[in-house]
Image (tube, rainbow, N blue to C red; front, side, top):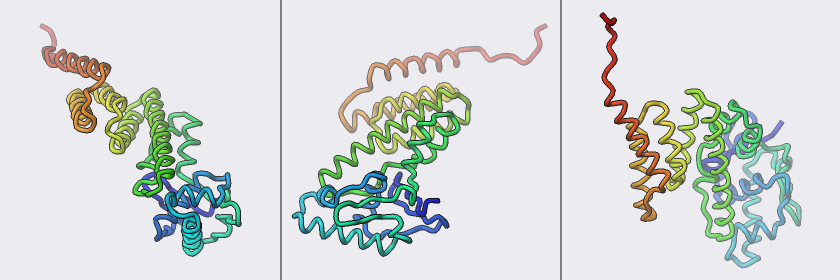
Length: 256
């Protein structure tokens, strides 16, 4: 049984198997733990970690900062020695000692059936390592790439849930799509998915509001206009809306 649950979507949260939260007072120590947990079971050299997390510092200072972060983790993590192996060369986390929400998320997506996709959607609570920032250009480049990769996987969950059908699954897909847009509002394909979902649910006014939001965000952030596919979709939805409004109301009275 894992000794620790490490949640990395939406920040860094460490839980003991008892459910008790473990507070990590140092942001750098939390970042170190998250990075090594994501790399498990592969070990990472001390020199690589020091250069990645303390890029721009002199080598001696970077290694000293790495040692301090490890000391912080030693003080706060229960059964530290069973969780983290840190010798003179490498640092690694024992894969049997931890469970991460990111690892579970990716495994559920591989299995791919609707029930597991719904569980994966619930795990994607926010951006990977949200709130974690660094002055290290190398670390920021890695983090940006990982966030984008996981965001694309979350999109797979949205599409899979919609393909599976059913009102409950569509509601889960909509909630996940909204979380993705809260992270990156420039994802125009996600705006289109939401427009289609709302239209299928008969919420055509919501679908058109989503188009307006997409158009406003694109113009404000990058001075761009929606793609042709998005424009065509909103025209189709408007036609559906007008057609529905123009139909005469059905009478419940029997014909004479």
